[in-house]
Length: 117
Image (cartoon, rainbow, N blue to C red):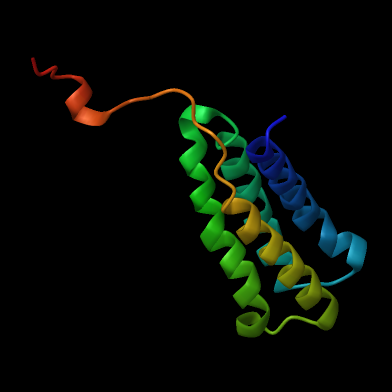
């Protein structure tokens, strides 16, 4: 498994953790609501980005990770939720920067429909 795939798998696991963390760590709203919205989004984008042709979708997790870093300050989290959000947000941001190798060419936009001689 290459490093890009490992990064996506870890992001999927972090998304699952975000959905479970409010119950496991015992914190409530607004942090629990935020985690249960952001978690599935992280899972979705990380899963789509696992394939080489859609690898650029990984960038969608970057603003989600940044939001997790800002949300505690904007929404007034408790200390447990703050630490969890900051840690998960930082790792999601860092893993979103892992690009991996692309061995094939996919798509090409409108230019691929019209071949010039």
